[in-house]
Length: 111
Image 1 (cartoon, rainbow, N blue to C red):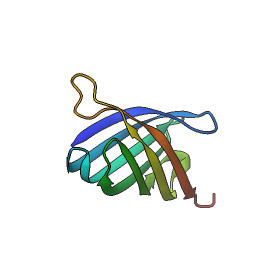
Image 2 (tube, helix red, strand yellow):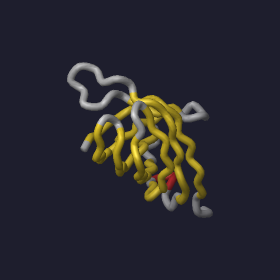
Image 3 (cartoon, rainbow, N blue to C red):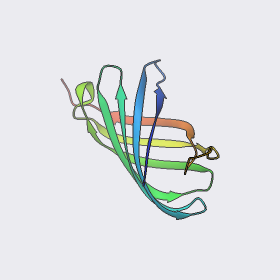
Image 4 (cartoon, rainbow, N blue to C red):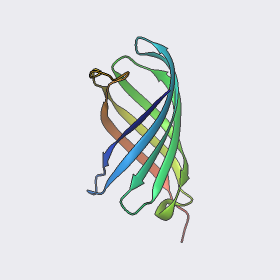
């Protein structure tokens, strides 16, 4: 099990912070995983998604379901697709940092 955090930069220039709870059962970069990611944007609104699948050595590629939203994202429904690579672990790290891109495809309820 691993908890990760990182910065997010959106296409519109908005920045946020994401936290990932990652549960993985694998050997040498391959194996099954389940993860929950919460993205918090500058106004405090959040989007939480869940994905599961099979890991790849040195990288990742997944599609997950958006399962919750708060603030301006209350009632959000949709998917998130992400792809990137895992950098080699630095001293003291179990798993290296991740660098990649994510695409959110979603709808919001009418106001």
